[in-house]
Amino acid sequence: MTIKENLLERKIGERYFLNSSDSGSCVYIMNETTYKIYSLIKDGKDIPEIIDRLFDEFDVDKIELEADVNACIKDMINAGVIIQ
Picture 1 (cartoon, rainbow, N blue to C red):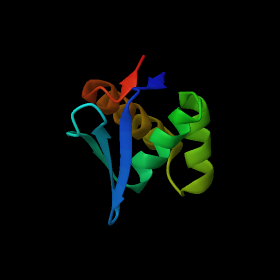
Picture 2: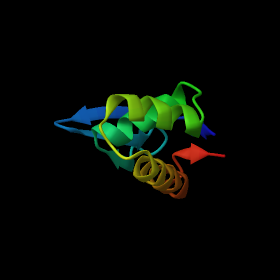
Picture 3: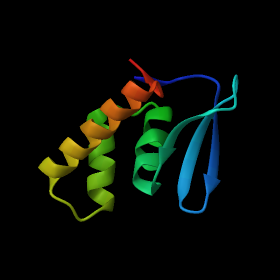
């Protein structure tokens, strides 16, 4: 899993925006948690590592966390942010 090249990151308020450096158009909007997942993927972490990191940080059910992380990654793939 890798992040698509040529994406520019911007933070406005509590939201993070990914814009295409080619067209300048907004590709994806993230909240703080989604941005953490995105950043961990950028750092080369795989899904189990991402889940473990977030599980250590948040007080959540691990099964629910796994489902949420997988759904978030699937959404980023569908948006073209992540390339498999």
